[in-house]
Image (tube, rainbow, N blue to C red; front, side, top):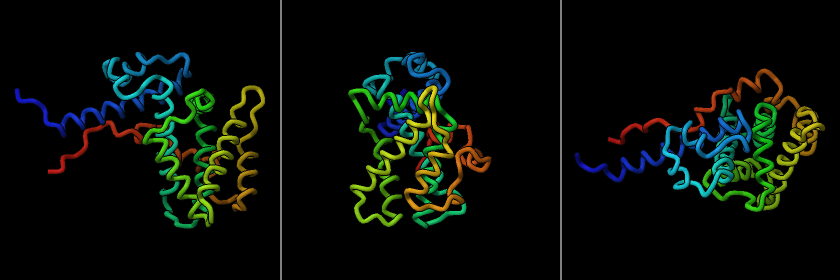
Amino acid sequence: MSPRSASVNEELRRRSRERLLQAAVELVDERGFEATTLGDIADRAGSARGLVSYYFPGKRQLVQSAVHRLMHRTLEEALEREPHTEDGRERLARAIDAILGLAHDRPVLMRQHMAGLLQAEGFVQCPEQRRLSELLGDTVARCGSQDVAADYPMLRALLMGAVYAALIPGVPMPVPALRAELFQRYGLDREAGAPPESESGQEARGQDLSRFFATEERPSAD
């Protein structure tokens, strides 16, 4: 049997990483962070347990990368859904609703994610986190920002604060109230976007996460 080509090995590694990301999101969403082990994630992904450490230093880094993937793909999908728009204010409304929608739909997962960000490691610098930053930065720029370097971190902080407020055990703030506050701050029409608690908002986000993880074999370039 001839050895696999470099391109075949690269494709297999890519698909393995995607399966691990998807399994991490699903299991933490179902069980929480502490009740999910790396072995559980490897088993769900159909991967060897030792393979996890090849891609990720530990469970927290894997889960944070997985949630950042979910966030950036949810945001990307919201920004590009039909009817397509280049209007910066509508795109900002969609961005706010997409992130608040994750807090609304997946409170266990997002609560664990927010708690993880407060650990010493902070943000994991990974492709998923960088893509999320790029999308939010572009959204701020399209909305007319004259200083994206300052306005993007402020938007990120406000979104993180809103998600945190929505998920505090025992004293959560209602997502509609948090949305209204953010929309007022940015001067957005309350009819813009897709409110997280609305039927249209939930339909737009959907429940099947597999579309966000490219676990299937890519078509050959031949």
